[in-house]
Figure 1 (cartoon, rainbow, N blue to C red):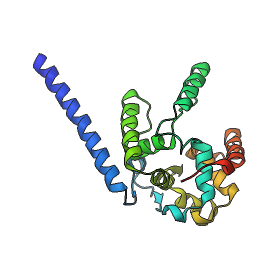
Figure 2 (figure 1 turned 90 degrees about the horizontal axis):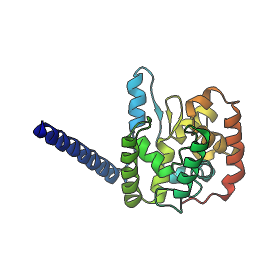
Figure 3 (figure 1 turned 45 degrees about the vertical axis):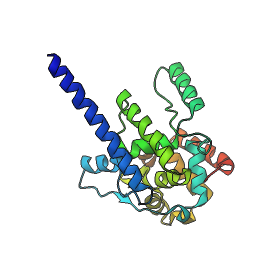
Figure 4 (figure 1 turned 45 degrees about the horizontal axis):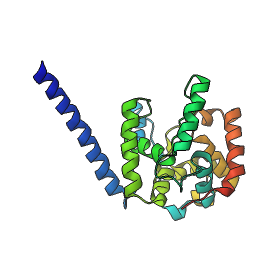
Amino acid sequence: MKKFIVRAVLILVSFILLVQLWIFCSLAWWRTHPVETTMFMRIDYWSDPSEPLHHEWRDYDHISDTFKRAVVAAEDGKFLQHHGFDWDGIQYALEKNEKSGEVVNGGSTISQQLAKNLFLYNKRSLIRKGQEAVATWMMERMWSKQRILEVYMNSVELGDNIYGVEAASQYYFHKSARSLTNQQAAFLAALLPNPKGYQANRNDPKFKFKQRFTLKYMRYSQIP
């Protein structure tokens, strides 16, 4: 029994180390190469292979600054100040969740969200959060803030089988991500908390509020 436990622990530790090595190598490759697919994209495709994924990579300079500012305003106002984790935001989220009796705010930064999108899955668990933290820590030390935001904008989910700002811009507005107006950028950024839900119900009060909030504060956003 003792040998079995030791063997199981060694297998588990080896698996965890292999996952970390995979994350490290992926981040090293993606420092200079476009991210063509993410774990979220794979899961989406595997769930229904008959539905094609819509995704087009665009370099940082080919995405409008309005969308960059909208994303930072909507998702991570301290993006340029933190090193992957917004501890004040996490504390606020914990207090809000405790008061509500359920998880209503995650407190995740853009870096944390990107780490989850690239390597993990959406189900909440301590194991996932631990892997997310490690991936975020590595990403913040291997990539610049500009690269993190660039990959985030190109890989984030913005609707049913729609990934990245270019595919979303073409789908919703029939135009390039380079030409988004303030209102259009705020609309796309407001989708982020619940892209499929808000895509299907664009009159949702939470979605409308998120658009107004983003439009109001995006002018103050600091971007790389």
